[in-house]
Length: 177
Image 1 (spheres, rainbow, N blue to C red):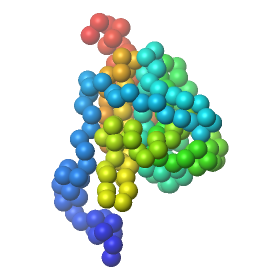
Image 2: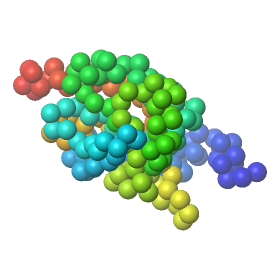
Image 3: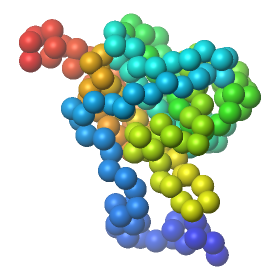
Image 4: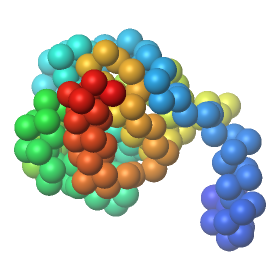
């Protein structure tokens, strides 16, 4: 039995205790998101746009079941994100050909960005550096136009929940809260 199989057999409280010790703490709500500048599979460069809400989806791998489901959920709600002035960026270390094949296979119309070596993922505390490789942790951040983190989540929160958060935060801003 390998280490991964052993971990899956552990009781949930023990698994959570291990994650709490090994996983980096998420960036906190209210913190400024680190600067990032990444390239899409089509050669376009992207960075945080100060006029838009940003959803950063750091995901472990192209065309894997969990990542596919997470990004399909985002794509299904993409029109609503755009209506709210929000952009989605999928981020992982895969190279352009992998991102291109993944996007075309599943019809993703938002940018999938290459994070070579997991540099941005580490800045976003969405990676664990092991001796021989970087392990990407499924992580989602919602960032407002002022680059402040408004939601930080390890895992795959539903797109509908992120949309409700944007709606509530925009309403609070309009109300002067």
